[in-house]
Amino acid sequence: MNERISEFISKQTCGTLACVDETGSTWCFSFFYSFDEENKLLFYKSSNDTRHSIIIHGNPKVSGTILPDKLNFMAIKGVQFEGVILSADDPLAAQASAHYHKKHPVALAMNGEVWTIRLDHVKFTDNTLGIGKKLNWVRTADAVQ
Image 1: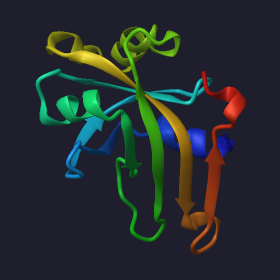
Image 2 (image 1 turned 180 degrees about the horizontal axis):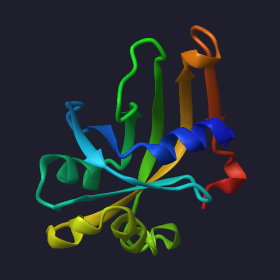
Image 3 (image 1 turned 90 degrees about the horizontal axis):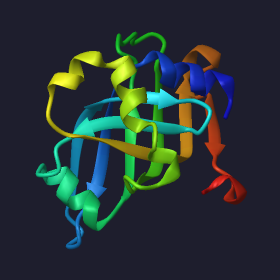
Image 4 (image 1 turned 45 degrees about the vertical axis):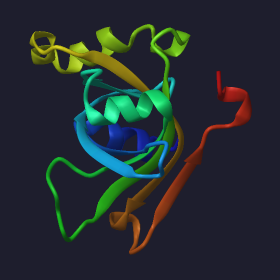
């Protein structure tokens, strides 16, 4: 992944995630996250009984966006991504809770589970590099575990 993309994702704290249920209906929600740069994973915390969690149990494919925590309309930046929610027993999800709570320790007081998003495609728009400049990253087939 391009270091500009990783640096941007690492510096932010909140994103929006979209999911699709079995009828084709869409739903999105905002989430606080931590980023595992080495494995290209996002971790977030949510309860199992939320609408989005119920949908994701049936269809783990998701897409989302990450905008800067502080918007600068003169220097538009942001990430669009596609990925898959990994099962809690996936080896890549083993450190999810520790990783997430290290960045967001106050979340220890909240009920819920920490979920893992495996990023498979990321498009980063950064107009500070030139109007309409996009950087893309795609997980290779041999990197999917």
